[in-house]
Length: 594
Image 1: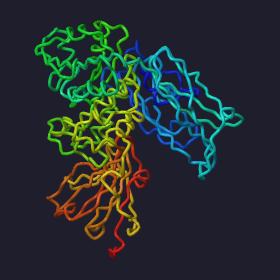
Image 2: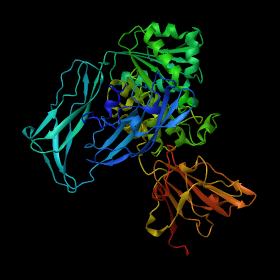
Image 3: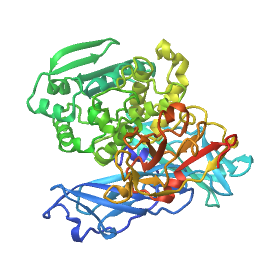
């Protein structure tokens, strides 16, 4: 996976930036008395300017051992590998944290912001981006333009003025490879990515081992493949409702005939009940075999572990196509008003669930070389939810809608696996009810393939942000700790959890936070607005993660006081200064505020 898939997002052109390569002391490497079973990181620097040198910031690395204990590692005990980060090309890149001698790793994403400088840069257009195994690299049709960062000036370069470095290209293996374009005689350069895929124009065979969520994702997969010109298509789905990795493992171990085997070879799905996993695996020479976790456990990293390892080994031992690849279906978060029984695990908060799914996949799938693809349906759906469609992409709060939701999932699967452009999807294959949102479907999938682990919004989340020119920013002070309305000493400033929160230093009233005010929150943060009516009447609402909130009468209800707790979605430590920068209250100028 590290070689074949992550490189599709990053440019492995810089040397490794590694800190403290040797683990020692209490790191407890594998083979010692205790084994590191998992790593987590917090406090790292995540945002960089173009050309800025990578450095991990105030990173804190925590090891969890096989006996359940945890320990914070010193900088000499772990390594931070940023070799996949191209600090001279805007985008998102993965950084890997590891311990020498231990198999456990974790990763996190940094972003490099575009054009923070006065200067010139290159733009590449019309480059061939999809190749099949065995194809020689070509750059015919390439157009390279020299642009000014702060001006509209642009000049198309002649072929003699730039050079193309395709040394990372590998025609013999599926993957995505960075191509560097540099202007001769200067340090100005950029890159683009090409994909090498098996030629699926004649045959495409995929088997999903899943449940109703893989049912949703494969419903239109046959139709999409045909629309792209694939001649012979076979799509299989082994279905048990709500099936977890642990259950799949048990069914495989006991060779149980418990699956509904849904197979599409002609455009119609035929279901065979009481089917065995082993029989389905051996029935076809599958090109792709797809795994997933059940939705309720998709964001619970601890549920992957040995069950995932078993399933991967089982597939490897029983597949009939030696070249078959393994993909991971990254599922979606529930609709915000979902009544699913597992939603409270994620604080009944869609974004908390989405972030949990992303973190679980990064921890358990990206670090596993057995996977060739991650199918980022969860991100594609989350992208689409920021469009004019809003949070309407499920039919019951968790299963996808029968038209647009399922089409987004199918297009994500097909284009990630084959390397085809989502924007080339023929409109004729869309359900009639989805034709008017063709742009949403294509754009949400395109963005998910480019940035699989972060949301790419269509517009400011929640609609059009109010014009704040008629508002006054309220000075808001924060302190370490959190409010807890049910306690008499409501501001908690001591204890293990304090470092994860920052609280407003004061409680607000209707006079200090009047109706019509706007609360603005940065991406990656959440707040809980504790509420009091009197000493015996209080409320602890769900966390809010949307970009802005307009204070109205329903927000105040019958409460007399409210106060805010801020935390990061990732659960990293928070400082009062960070909270003050991520949160703001704007009061209408028309209000005579004192």
